Image 1 (cartoon, rainbow over the protein chains, first blue to last red):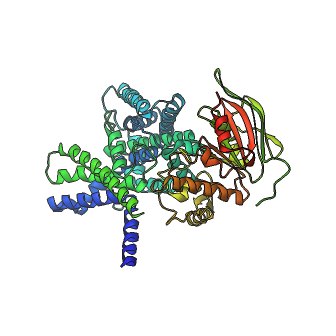
Image 2: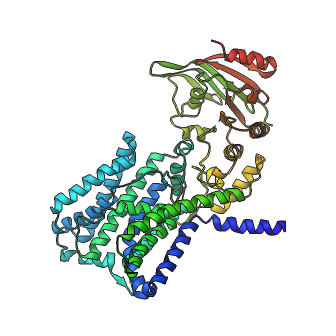
Image 3: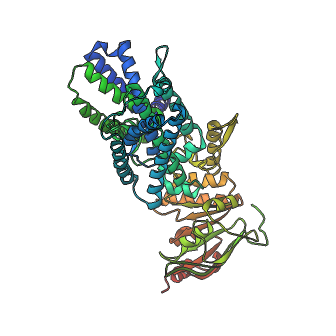
Length: 327
Length: 249
């Protein structure tokens, strides 16, 4: 009897210790709910629609997730998301080769990330404040450049469209990019030294420093990754829509944070997984799509996301208490 | 136990440290021999933490010399001190609660294996070695994948001590290791410290609680307002006399 209980406890502990378990359960519940409301929800066409829109938020969210694990925020990702494709198109219009223009634009995004990091860490300002400022600055720059009107998408940029949002068979290239980025970041976070330093920096900065890790360097690199990925996601959306929308990415920073929190990341840092962020992003996109499929008013979207965030945190905390009891 | 050497493992001479106009340390000398447990005691503000932060590379001294195995050394960062063989365990910063035991033990010194140009964490080896490291300090935990935040205060300190022992630290500095711990947990920490001595590792035990350091220390240094009041072999001074020295005005 005692042995049986021990085995059950061990199994329960193993299941509960899966970091993404709470978000996975919620994903299943939401999919089942929308399938009940509309049977076409799981049709091949609709799954295709969902998969087409996941990469843009997903790529930006996974960058924010890594940054959050190291204990910082970046509210400027939405503005960088809008700025990157505009800078790319401006460079192409100025006669730059499409590939070079994209690379320069992404390097520019890295510069924005580095600036966020250096200002935050050098002056000891909370990243929430720094990036709130840069969010407004870069959004303002976007509006200044475009004067509020979407600039035309030039023909010279068509190869970029193929690279970003073309199709290989029935698979979108943007999805392949997303899977690649997720795989790379998973390896970095879970299987590399740098990943361990990210967790240490976010979990206890002083402890990390005492053991020879440079937390500032870790954070600046993560700021750069977050901006780079936001810029890349913005270029993908620009290519998908074939138009550069100056208001693109507005409110995206909160969706990215929501995706990370739903996926199990802590706002204070130290906890989170790449897969959790993927599940969080999927949940957001599925709710967005599912409400349309169920013919529900779009206003319900924010209501649902808000509820899911709170539920995710409650479920995570409950699971932690349960694990502590079993230990 | 390692044979005591003729020369001390580490020797600090005439250490001074100012913070603005405040003199935190004034001409302090300290030495630790091989395999010795040295207690540093003093009331709040005595300069204990400043002294060990200098020794662990957090602050540079404004004046004075640090000699490690007879050679003059300077530490520009905690990493320099760790490379030399000095590791410090601060109670608040000993471990990362949100990371598991294995990742804590190898934090900053991860085990990797090469796969072409890529270096992967050797998770299996890290898990195996961390369990061995814990057993060496008498800690028998269920899994190296358990979160440190789910362990008791004493076990957390044990993980940090196991880490220091695993990486063959020569001098371990324990900063107030028994603060906020129950009597049972404090006793466990004292056992860990004695285990260190048995394995030839020197340690400095900083505390303002004489009753914790007295049973395990070989020598006791008393600091008061940034100055060294005295240095005693334990058998030469009673706990009551030490208390009186600590509270001198």
